[in-house]
Length: 90
Image 1 (tube, rainbow, N blue to C red):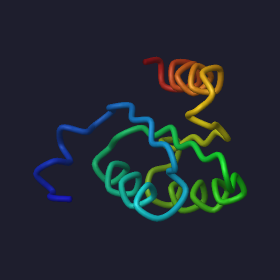
Image 2 (cartoon, rainbow, N blue to C red; image 1 turned 135 degrees about the vertical axis):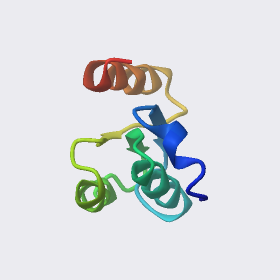
Image 3 (cartoon, rainbow, N blue to C red; image 1 turned 90 degrees about the vertical axis):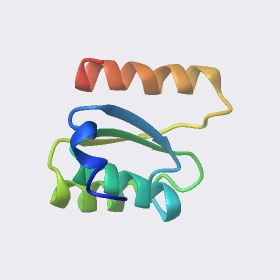
């Protein structure tokens, strides 16, 4: 992503589904560099969230939170939003 995008991301809260690897992680990494706060979910391989958490903490400690959640499940989507509100206040 362009550095021109980063200033506008400061303290924005972003939910990324599939945020532990691949394209989801790439997006999370770039948003973290720009100052965003991230809630990353994963449903199939939640153990990968631990690795993503370690990498994120090296970039922006305290700005990345993970949750095992399946976007096909309404209650898990609601829990994801609740976590964002509880953790980052919005």
